[in-house]
Length: 256
Image 1 (cartoon, rainbow, N blue to C red):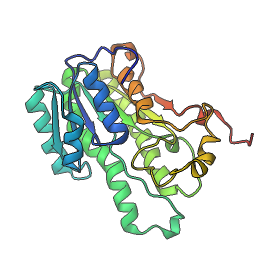
Image 2 (cartoon, rainbow, N blue to C red):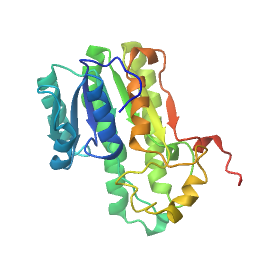
Image 3 (cartoon, helix red, strand yellow):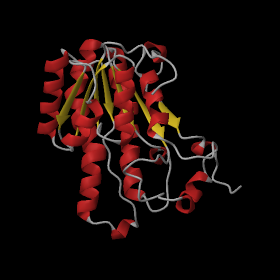
Image 4 (spheres, helix red, strand yellow):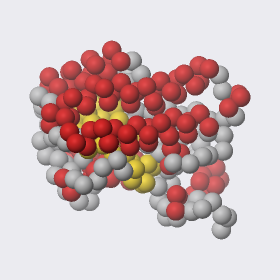
């Protein structure tokens, strides 16, 4: 899963949205590097597939919805009971909705905000005391869509801008308490969530054209950056938003 070995052995890790895509890749990478990993998400069967085969006592799947504060409290309590604390929390759970703003319903916006923004709010409230005790690390999966604008994605981009704002402000509030807070910002990444966007070479072409490396991102491209940010090698990195985008954000947007 990772080329290098990361110093996370024995660390207690929680990954939200850990049943598929980027979250599953992050969870497996932590497991491969010796961490104890709990995954949470809405689909229990998907979560179980991620942890199947892990050494006994090193992996835990807990079904839950990050948009529900009671669910978040229950999940965090279960992980702390199983692992004795928390060293790393990865806020990855996310939803996606695109289209003209006037065509999105109030329920579309509610669902998007509930997962992308409220989910981070509830999670941070629940885990920060534990991370303060362990001098741990919170890493959020943001997006390059949280750094600027996109056509037809005003609502989604607004939620990802909120994630970036959370990360930067929490870094200021918790740095003096020994908790490091950072984010990674992928661009277009091939996952279940984006399967309907780029399903063949023709539909992928406009995305690939904006990527300096000439290919879409994969979940496995993002995971090592999260592991790095969770280690002491990143000990002086705080409030950062690390783009993992194949060079997408290096462009000014001018055509080739």
